[in-house]
Image (tube, rainbow, N blue to C red; front, side):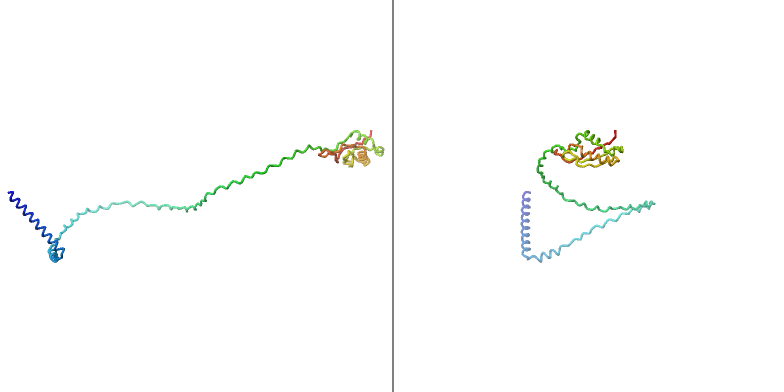
Length: 220
């Protein structure tokens, strides 16, 4: 039995060797082009096998369509309200950031000049009578003789100018007594008898001034 197995294995080896030699020869022939025609004939002998596809399955019976049902008409649809499209707002123009203006230059004024010394108090004053009761009595005692005879009485208002030496430089009747005799006598008496403290200016120097008074002529 073992001998037979060894004989069969040797036959298989020999067969494999022969097949390998045949393959080598066929490859050589194919490469060299000698078996081109033989290869063509072998290819023509190959029969093609048509494979028939199985027929498609028959369609199943479709169920009958459902009976139509009464369908309520759709409710009326109101048209949508008009949409008012606001116009696009005007473009906003932005200005670049403007830097703040530079602060003005600080100008320091020069120092104020020193204030002048205060002026001395003013010494100005008007003319004032000097011993008025004395010279007013003398004027009244110098009663005009014609007025005495006619028994004329009255009061005379006068304004006199006073010179820097205190004497009357002018006389003016400001209120008449009604008698020209008494009016003239009053001015003559003021020019002759009246004495004044002269008016002074701001520096205290004598200057022209004026004075107003009344002379009354009355019989005893």
